[in-house]
Length: 401
Ligand code: ADP
Ligand code: MG
Image 1 (cartoon, rainbow, N blue to C red):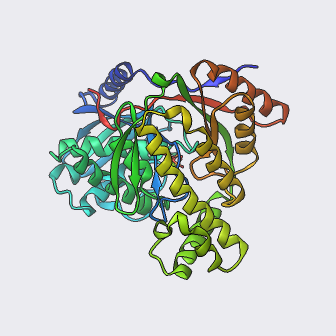
Image 2: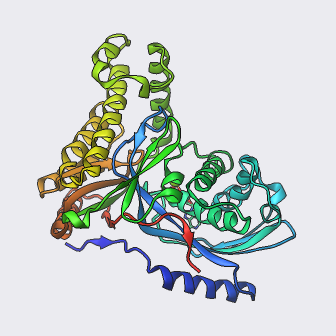
């Protein structure tokens, strides 16, 4: 059984090649090359829209942009992953416009201005060449990687501070670009991870007040690896189900008289459940409240240097998402079951669900064996072959050249 690993790019080589490609296309050097990572969420799923906690880390898989400012308000952008050049006028960018992948590029300067960034580089336009090494639509946030690479480029050229506070402001702008211009209703986790993570750690993101705490994640030191399995399953009803879950937790919060489900004390969960109408709403609330508590406990274990002990929390997270929140699917459940049966310390779906990716925490020397077992199980069931990535916590958005 052959397994396909999606390798992380060699950063210096990729950046150098992209600068060369820019020069060939535009006849001049870019002002620089910047890159931003995709992300994977270790734990804390479907709680970012109810004031919860999540614990994402940046992947070594990044999206690069070579960029040079213009002064005439035009944007000309190509991507090595897309056909043709997109040409547009920055003045025409707004809600829902442009459509297609260029929204994730041109939406960024528009959203930065909306968020109070003010510099001629944000209205002058630019030429850009993109090279993405985050698989599309796998729940690893290639969209945020693209936005954040553009944001860190424009932010630096606009003289904006790139400390954590400055990055938080850029993340808010990227989220606005994704929500308003690209029209994707998402929370802010992806952009926060892509901009605010550091190598060797995850971030504990508090979506109630947008604060970020760095949490060291020394997987290699613990003899562990985090295997990401891209199931390559994409279920068409995912968008509608996402909206329905959001509506459920909003209704539950209203019924309980709290601003969001973060406000429910996990020690008094039963009391809250007893006040709700119907089994479905109770299960949704039980997921959110127990998941937020699992994130806290995971972060505590990591801070204590006990990464090898988080497996049960990962498993409980998946079971809750599958049974109480009902956002898993056959391919995700199969991945998790097979990984567990082949020695994973813990495994869970990650991201929005209904397809996308799962993660498995495994002994470093078991990565190949677990990947083979998952591949074999998919083949046996006639499913599209999954792809694999190895996640080592990487650096957030930064300049490469
Ligand atoms: P995810 O963020 O989970 O990968 P999304 O649907 O949110 O999935 O974002 C994927 C979209 O982002 C792609 O369809 C494309 O429009 C855009 N995108 C991501 N990476 C690139 C890239 N390297 N070049 C052009 N567009 C990209
Ligand atoms: Mg996305």
